[in-house]
Image (cartoon, rainbow, N blue to C red; front, side, top):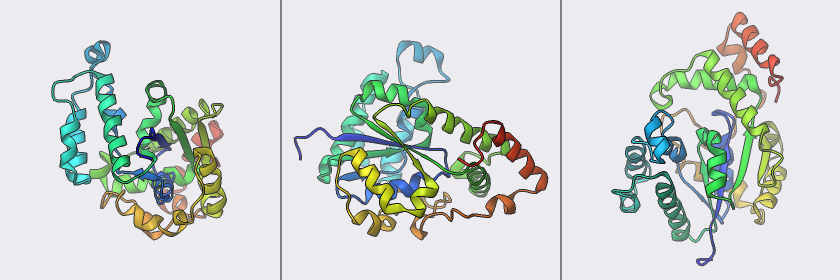
Amino acid sequence: MHNKLKLPLFLFGCPRSGTTYLQSLLTAHPEIISLPETKFFHYLLPDNEPKRRILGMASRRLRPKLETLFKNEMNRPDLLKYLPKNILFIRQYTRRFLKIMNLLAEEQGKSIWLEKTPEHIRYIDYIEKNLPIAKFIHIQRNGIDVVASLYEVSNKYPKFWYGGFDIDHCIERWIEAVNITSQHLHKDNHILVNYEQLVDDTPTILKELCKFIGIEFDNKMLEDYQETAKSLIRKQSGRIVSQGAVNTKSQKFYQVFDKSQQEYILRRLTEVGQEQN
């Protein structure tokens, strides 16, 4: 195994769509390793720094974020030595990041590493260009449930969500994720998971995913995912995978929003045909 190239696997979806739940299920497989959200590509590309983007230089925001990830969230300050000290270019930083991910997989004897950062859905083209062997899993959940959950949790834990989101932001995040996903599903290296189907028939969906990934299904995925989740979730972020999957018959939408807000959300979602996807 140690001489094999590790398979990069990316998991995308709008926040509150079940990404962490699915990540926990997959990471419970003996061949897969994952870690807390790296947000690597989100901070790598200098979207708001046009001069650096033109020159192919990494964003100034990247290194501080990686230092926080390795030291505080993963308790692996030793990984900092693999970060470039004087290298400023995007491609060089990308190669170093891939080296770290492969190293982590190697340490635990895994053949696959899984990266789950919802924002990375915006960087699929860049990831595919630099990691042509990568595979991508998209997960989607009922639109009204996502909007209600994202609105509630971001306002309850604003520190971990960069401030509480308003209703329009929650709607737009969901629509954006759905639209981007639809642009890539014709490719063989992309697959879509429906959250409600995952919860209702977890073994069947996991077997389909294992076939897509190229590994055998393992019952540990069903038995150990709650324990696995503990190493993937930031405390007080509003994620509670350890208590099981979110109820697909949730009434949160009707509890969080008043009648006028409900009508507005349904109208916005209906316009793009996403309220029940």
